[in-house]
Image 1: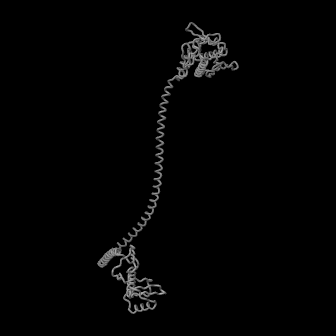
Image 2: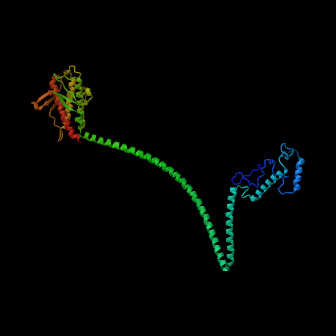
Image 3: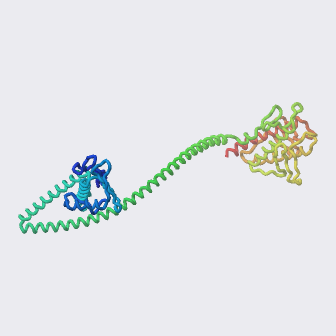
Length: 432
């Protein structure tokens, strides 16, 4: 069998040649291995004299010997061309001539190389079908041309002129349509450019929309947080309003200063003011009670806009005192350590100065139609508290040459006057 193989020029599959193209299948037939296109190759059907001449030239140019075991087969070497020839001369001629003929036939069939050869059977069938279609179309066009030629012979001169005019009109219409087509193509190009720009703008708008959605979600979340904060603030405001209403109804003086009694001893903010032989009270508590009393008098005077003369009241807890405005700012303590208290002149002077300040408050508060009316009178110069209801009893507020009972009684009357003052100030000033 020949080693020469052909490939289909369309599907690139190896070709299976027809039996008429195959070489002899006898086992003693061998192949020729040489350079193709040798100038000495012969074609099938050539002159016998030329074949003999080629054979003689071949025998003369190479030393030949018979292959062992293969009678009638020769093997030759040519030192100049370096090829080996196997088999009989008749088989060699037949192979070369058939291969050359097949190659030439394929080149002739290829023509202008529109359809190259060789082709496989499937590709050939497909090509033949296409050619049949083209032949059918060509035959139809030929029939149409024949009909046109026959019709042309029957048309008169006037009809021919009419058709010529129609043809010119159609040509003009064609030119117009071609121009419109060009304009449409230009418009199509512009439209394509506009479409591309619109698509780019759409992408940009899509990105902006995504960003806007993110911003919207963020703002909505902030809105919900603000709603929660607003709800919390409204709740706090509602609670604060309730507290405010309650505070408005609350008397600040009554809530801050609570004047009451503990048996025979008067109290202010639970601090006992005074002492009895049967009820001893430590002086730290008495001093704290005096500090609360001084703070109360200062608050009342500030409420009605009173500025004390002769003395300045300075409340400092259990170390409160008064400062003299006429005697080189001498400090008068409203506290004591309990040692020889009833002989302590400065402490007595401070309590008498305190009665002076209270008298100034009374005089200012009693002015007007709705003035204050205190139940117990004050004698500043003598340092006495008068009880009109008990037959005109007088109780000194000094500790010197006095008893604990009378001193405590004077302090009690003083606190009762303060309690009435708290009620009056609450009704007149706090409601405003």
